[in-house]
Image (tube, rainbow, N blue to C red; front, side):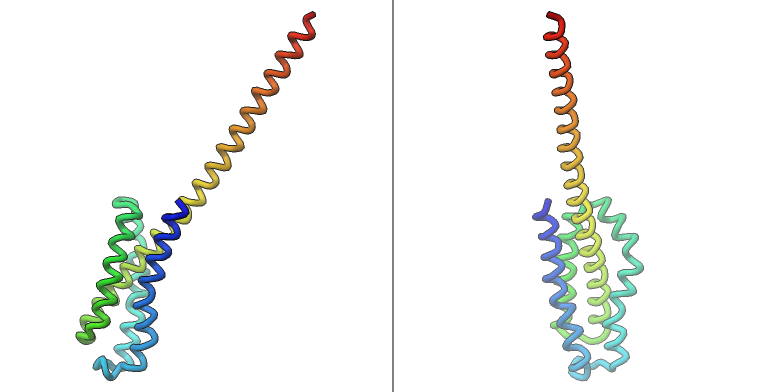
Length: 155
C-alpha cells in the first residue's frame, strides 16, 4: 500500500515539472510565444479554475474507474499538456493544454489523497485487528486459568 502512495506522489512530482517550468519561462519569454502579459496571466490561472470546477466530477470518476486507472490517465494527460507547451502553437493550444493540465492535476491530487487515506485506514484496521486478537487471546487465557483453578479447586 505504501508503494502506491509513493507511486502516485512520484507521478505528481514528475507531472509538476512541466507546470513549474511554464511558470518560470512563460512570463519571461511571453513575446517569443506571441503572448501578451494578460494572456500569460490567463494561461497561468485557468488550471486553478478548472481544478475547482472538476474536483467533484473527478471524485466520482475515481470511485467509478479506480485510483490506479485514473492515475494512469492523469499521467498521460499531464504528458500531453507538457508536450503541447513545447510545441508553442499559440494562445488557444496553450489554453487547451492548461485546461488538460488542470484536469490531470485534479486527478493526481485526489488519487494521491485517496491512496493516503486508504493507507492510513489500512494501518488503523491492522492496529484494530491486532488489538482484537490481543483482547481475544487474553479472554481465552482467562478462561483457561479459570478452568484450571476450577479443576484444582475440586480436589
